[in-house]
Length: 347
Image (cartoon, rainbow, N blue to C red; front, side, top):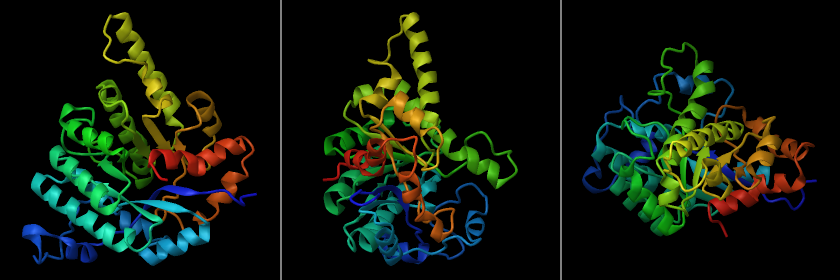
């Protein structure tokens, strides 16, 4: 029975539109008119994602839609991520990246977070300018009460998030005790632009991007330099984590045999000590393996609402997950809320 079970959505989405967001530009861009042909954020990768989603899927969402959804699903809180703005890492003009990140965050707070305290905002960070990204994280946490900062999983910066250029962001996140999240969607720059169907692209875009950024952050020593930093790798499921940690541990073992000791602990220990979290899919067959091999405390439940699926399907995830017999009630409670509370530092 689900009576008394708290559920937190660790990864939901808004469907931001240019017409709404452009009202929230500030500074020199206040009141500027936009040419309607061009979007504020770049395309994710050139695939017609909006029209694919339009086949009996949820195509419009506002704050009232979200309130109706969480109340109907008995969700206590939902952490909101963007859709179009997931491509922000591809913006070439670094100053413009800062402008639109601030604009998006202003819009998100005003249209969602201020309306219902159960809707938690995540600050879009302009990673093109790490110092400004750190400043924006501080602003959004202190002024808007946002619960995390978003690092777009794919960028055009020719460096992974383990690079020292991003340290100002990690320093502020650790100081504020707020997590950072790496969220994919973009398939550009991942090495499989030659694939010819959206099904192929969508299969690979999330896990490959997360593997790249996790490898960069772990092996470049981010979690040694910032030992209290929490980073979530979202929307790739959880089954890849044991595989990836095996590979990273093997690399670490080889380095130590060669008398190279760049890390203080084995890579898998960062996961077990609470630096690394992931969201999981409720129907993943390997969740029991992940819980057994990597621990129970770092998987979180995402609805991904309103992406990909028909509206009525989302509500089935919670009861179906609770009915799984391969996971203990303890693990299911952790996935549904306890882990997300710890990760997002929710009271």
